[in-house]
Image 1 (tube, helix red, strand yellow):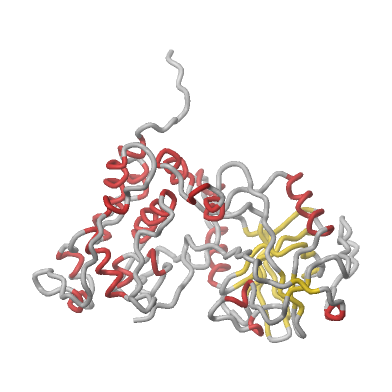
Image 2 (image 1 turned 90 degrees about the vertical axis):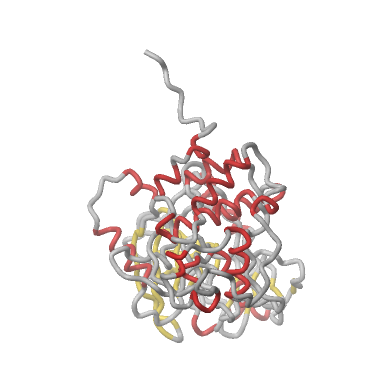
Length: 419
């Protein structure tokens, strides 16, 4: 029962930067393959930067780096972006920020409005771009909801004619690093329970745009000390640069796996470790999968280890092992949940007993939480169990989870003066 890893709401573009085994070469012959697409325009208010054809490390072409390391990588699907080129006669590419299964992300400058932007260039021939549809829906809604300002804005989009097909490119404001990357900078890669509470309230996605000076310094650094790269006969694979963090409230972003709430859903979503039970059993699902996700992400914030492994002894994601772990952690599912999917009969009998397709592991939430730091660990585990209910109808709403007694306890909600 091999599972294909798919990106979901909490999944970010990987910024893998481990280059310890990469050999730097000094060859200049490959520089002839560099290409620049710089055109003049009367509408430009700033001049494009000029990048030196030397002064960067060339990497061993036999080693796989960045998007090449993805199991589904096919080079012809990716647009061969070149640092320094100008796209849509307007946006100059200045640095690579990350990569993923469906796109690469780049830092750039809008030469018309003379401001920094981020470019998300999708793989070729995605005739209908789901993320673009989501942004169109968001932009079409007239709302004064205060949360609207915490959604990443789509500034523009256009199509690039690549050597193997068409590529949709989204233009965004440049946000800071993802919150998951921020956690990697924390000693032990885990926050305390006290730090978790405001963090959950702020949602863990992309940090806000860095200060203008930080962006300007980042640009200068990329021009003077260019990132290492691997130059091939038809493209250049750049290493991702570490983008400066922002300061303030994070924004929701990356809507590639978002779904419209007015439609029925039963398709496979979510990264394997995070899959809600109804997703595992191919049942219909709704926004309550996000409540499950909040619980799983909360655990990841305070623990350096994922709550569920879900892999069999061969290292393959396996529904039998995934569900067995959930039984160990949460107990047996209620009848109302088992009745949601005909696949339940594969794993449980009519009385709700586990059929033993694989042994139930000897693990508990309390046992796994031994090394979590902070006060009122019992309150956190109670809160976590509220979110991780088998039956989605038993999970609280986002507002109910936010105003849970444990979440409110000890939070500094602002100083109030007595009249």
